[in-house]
Image (tube, rainbow, N blue to C red):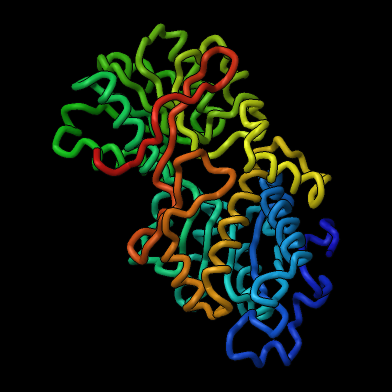
Length: 406
């Protein structure tokens, strides 16, 4: 395996230097990325740059495929997982993705990180017909099967999350007014789209929505205006530091609204502690995975399997880091997809099986949450459970909620 400092991972029998120059015998194969004893998969991520911490997702997957290869691989083939560092720079992502497709001739792309990086390549990979699977992104546009038939995200989108929030809010507070604070980009606008779908004709009379820019120093004025609307429910469709800002300012305003925050800002370290744990009491968010740092899962078979994997195959990784458990979870799903291919690893076959995941379980998903896809459903996960901050930790409550039937 190549050193991380060389900014490339290669899993399987090939050396790192071979990734840039695939032998002519492999190139001659009628099915790209497939040889008698090898299946080549490609990815890009951030081992460097502003979000380098997320690169551990792919490191966990490298370890998973190494384990799988030791167990015999898939249909007699070892997985050669080639991962290039793009530093979270979209032009670099395009350059490295073209290298994966045109030089390395991978069978498909897997678990590529980030909205900007994936936006830089999505048209290209769909034009050339390369499966672009289980992206580490949040936006709803990635499930647009009509425009991007070869692309599929993994995590629930913001549009799905807000529909689940509204479904719960209306069950608790029927006919209540709803305030939405949203980031003025694709991520934030998904909250508005989802709210309109959930409320239909009632949206205009029910919702007061205000946006902010990621460059704004505060969101105080927006929250003051939203409170003045008389809303009893607040949905903060925010990212980064704005999660802590919204929780803290709502508390300071003594606004007793039922407050939902996007799952991406539910981190205790990055959001709850800076806001003040006591200020966050009662805040609700959503979750769809088991938390490896939560001792409640210590005796769970799926969690035990994950931690045993980490101890043996990725001992340098942190087993309670949610990014590692996420990477493992997605690798497990890909493993099952490849088994469904029954040895046919043509791009057409791989995409057909990606479109045919039915009631699939993963050991790191919450009990009751299943993965389902079809040619017209490129959102594998459409279910979540709600959790509430109790002052010391997140406490899950209620049943698994789907975005359907609102």
